[in-house]
Amino acid sequence: MSEVRTRVTVPLKFADGYTTTAEVVTFTGLADGREHLALALGDVANADVPLVRPHSECLTGDVLGSQRCDCGPQLREAVERIASVGGYLLYLRQEGRGIGLYAKLDAYALQDDGLDTYEANRALGRDDDERDYTAAAQMLTALGVGAVDLLTNNPDKPAQLRALGVEVRDVVPTGVHASAANVRYLAAKVAHTAHTIALPLAV
Ligand SMILES: Nc1nc2c(ncn2[C@@H]2O[C@H](COP(=O)(O)OP(=O)(O)OP(=O)(O)O)[C@@H](O)[C@H]2O)c(=O)[nH]1
Ligand SMILES: [Zn+2]
Image (cartoon, rainbow, N blue to C red; front, top):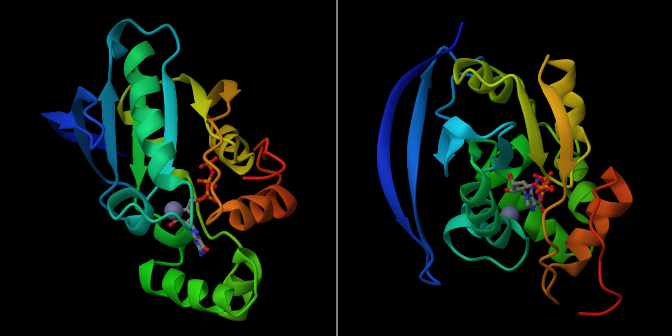
């Protein structure tokens, strides 16, 4: 069984000047043994159904500002949206859709030779998406959260969480963060895994 280990208050300031305060929560006993975090944002105690984003780690996008993907802008958007209504950002250590950072960068090199993001994974002998949300479900249970509104475009996230016993009331799409550098990647997500991203015709 998973339990909350520590809660610590962290003031956040983003590059664009937006500030908020997160209560960062750590856990014991998570299924995969990884150091996943929950960020409690806004007035979560009084939220009817908390807004929850399961955000998969992307060092290049979240930290370095890579424009090859949409992770950095999605993270920034999610923190503000959750803070405004109360909820949790689950920062899941599932770099590279579960294959790890070095393998993701190997996959980027293959994409530069013409493969799309999923073909590149398969060329490396990996699955399209190796993420498992058992730890995310455990974190919600440890936080005492039964029902959630889920902030994601990825239909696999509500499907897996529901199968794990989480009551997902609504699935709320994130904004579209398209650029010339990531539009091919976003198009592959829509085509291969039915992500609900309304892509503009040209960027
Ligand atoms: N293997 C691999 N992983 C990638 C690639 N680009 C981004 N990622 C990883 O993909 C994860 C984000 O997944 P996405 O498919 O962009 O989005 P999602 O989390 O499924 O869906 P949303 O909830 O809508 O954001 C992060 O862990 C990134 O590190 C890539 O080209 N190859
Ligand atoms: Zn990314």
